[in-house]
Amino acid sequence: MTIDDFELIVLVRKRRFWLAISKSHVLRVAAILACSVLLPYSSQKRQAAAQSADTADVIAQNQKAAVASLQEINAAETAFATTYMRGYSSKLSVLAGRTPDPPRYAAAGLIDNELGKGVKNGYAFTYMTEVSDGRPSTYAVTASPVNGAGNGNFYFTDQSGVIRQNSNRPATVHDLAVPLELIKLDSALDDIVPADVHVEVLADLGLTRGSLTEGPVWVRKGGYLLFSDVPANAIDKWTPDGKISVFLTPSGYTGTGPSESKRTHNGRALVHLIGSVGITLDPQGRVVFCAQGDRMIVRLEENGRRTILAERYEGKRLNSTNDLVYKSDGALYFTDPNSGLQRGETDPRKELPFAGIFLLKDGKLQVLDFKGRPNGLALSPDEKYFYAIDSTRNTITRFTILPDDTIADGHLFADMNGEHLTADGKDRGGPDGMKVDRNGNVYSSGPDGVWVMSPEGKHLGTIITPTRITNIAFGDADGKMLYLTTHTGELYRVHLKIEGVRP
Image: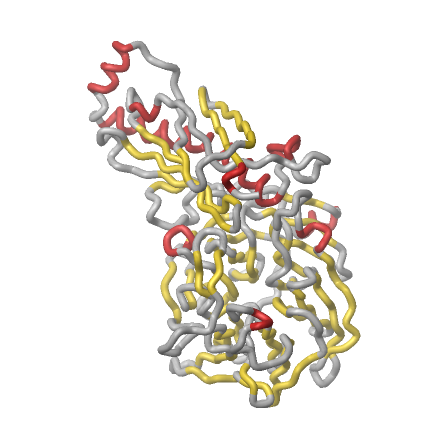
């Protein structure tokens, strides 16, 4: 099905909302949404309100009314977005994809409104939908002043669930918290996830610059977070004061000609996977990262110079380095799938006949035994076990780490295939990035958000996130903050009860 097969109607009136979904042939990308928060006024009251629209009190009321209306719109829109993207929402349980009757989705609709007429509140509302692979992916509502009333403030909301004032700035910790659902499958989750858990939006670079964020790592010496902005070809630095600055650019491709990296639609925009992906710290605290565009592993020295740690195996170029993790003895493990090449397995620039997991130790590069398309990596806190994600099979395999740092005895640790798709075939996300806590629990991006699994591989529950997660990292002074990066360019964080393993 395409977006042209659906229609969305959202009615907002008297501080209540109704969500009606019906199938029809509608506009592809956008439609106009209108709403009201007050009952119709008589013509005399309308005229009086219009005459006083320029006063400070009325402007303040207009802004307050706009935000209140947007909150109600956002509630309905979030319900629609979560149902469409995941096939599940507690707010729309009757329509949920986990029921026998899959939901019918919508994309756009036209509703009569009074607020947009500028009678009293002076605001016009516009509803927009961006499209990716035939499905709505970004949801935006802007509230703009009519005839100048309202001091020109604009408001924006999408499936992240946060209402932002001034649509040209990213979300911050001062914005509203993202509503969070928690799937609890085992009582052991109570010792890991607080009862009042919620997701904070630290930034939305997808909104401001069409980003795809990846590879977060907490730098304890300095107390800040590094993460990759892949399309921007940069490593960004987030500090606890909420500021984001460029830490390193270029981070993934340093050439002067066309990059060999993949172009894809991340759900918001067409992005070029040119920059760094996974980032970590070596035992000496130096930044080491996967330079996907250059197809190599690079270490950043204290003086700012770059040292190439790996770029070829047996004389052939690596594919597209993706994720990496250090063992305490200095052994470096990294994955090298072909997902960063434009044509993947059949790309003419691909030199290696396989996509592998590599071990770099004492200057020697060797391939470890792994079949599939490797992605995220992690080590158990005692470094006895090695975890590897296969993105093609949507599985996590656990290996035993041998005395020489190679791996053996691989067996299935987690299988997400049963949850990967909704009842009608929509993608709910899969394993990508992965970390562990001090108790050996494993955290991985997966269907609906972040999967929390016991050291034995039991799925304890899922921390629901508004958008699809790419990678995760523990941070902050106590190590209990879980930072999340996303396909659509957000940066989130969630506070947990257990300290995580950090480089």
